[in-house]
Image (cartoon, rainbow, N blue to C red; front, side, top):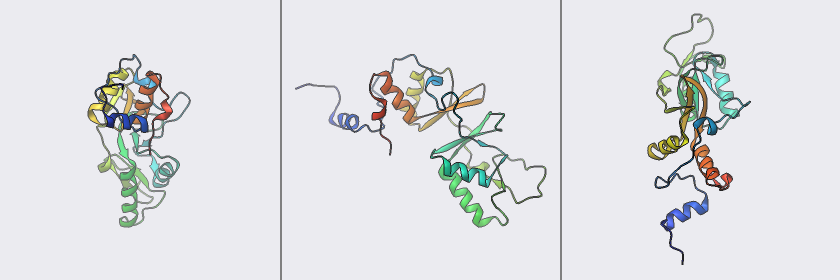
Length: 195
């Protein structure tokens, strides 16, 4: 009989490939956040701009992607991070606004700022600053993955945003961290299951 320091529950979690980061295990690899973040080179990151997208734009993004949340940036050209908004909060806010705000339609501008657009000739704007997390957890692209893994374990994170001098570069999700840990331990990263 082989005795291991792991219990039956640890073995059950490992066998079933559940998304669990064990706080007792060491992570001693020299990779950086930039090596693990999504998107990879030549891929685009799904973001929401703080004051230039319409209700239709946001609803299309929600339909075309399955992310749990989205970074909010100043503009497509100026990717400075403003905050993070959850999918469920966006869905609820848009549904409630359609019921409660007269004249709101697909061409209404969605705002994550306090300032109103200078020209207010069209339909009313949808102000969503109150659902914006303006202090999401971020790491720099040069943060060691050992630190990132530790943050996920100790803070119970679902994702962290990767920045460089305040400019958004990517996102690291719990799934990315788990796959990276498996890969570094020479295990199959595809054994990580997420429902």
